[in-house]
Length: 202
Image 1: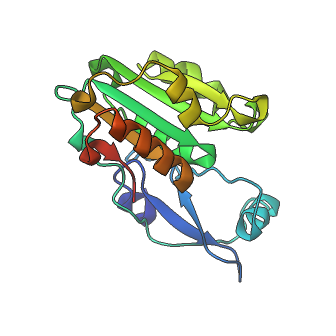
Image 2: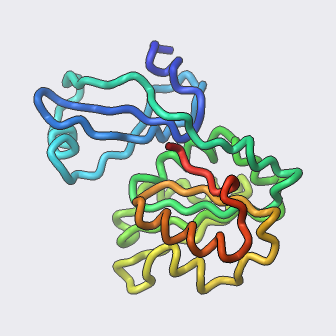
Image 3: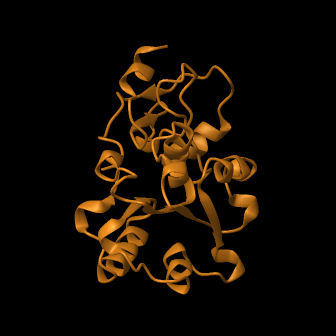
């Protein structure tokens, strides 16, 4: 295991990547910590650094920062006290959630409900689509939300479902666009979820 992998200890951590003189870009690590496997990220072919990365050949040199961030403080929501867990991820933000699921940090089987609202434009732009059955087998109910199919965003899909009835024993995990996070936070706080149980990786 390389030195960079040793710095990665918790799902939700990230690093910066730059290629040559490109502007550094942040990427959340998608592989589970402490697996001994290469670190994995999702790169959307949009923006200076991402476009250069996507055009690079195997073996190309890139500059990578030390691992950054605290990761998701999932220890604040143990299954014994927080039996309901709702997760919201959009676009490449699902990488951080993949790391949580595959490391079993969520302890989904020990909860009454663990549900992921995963928002993308359409199925073709949905990373890890083939892994979703495995995630569901691990106890995570996955609800795909395709904005390109007129389904709105993850917060819209969540509002159409039954509201949270036990906010005191419900946790929330957010990974994706800040606007999504703010929208979800406003909804769940009205439904009684405590602020310290709305978990982010920054």
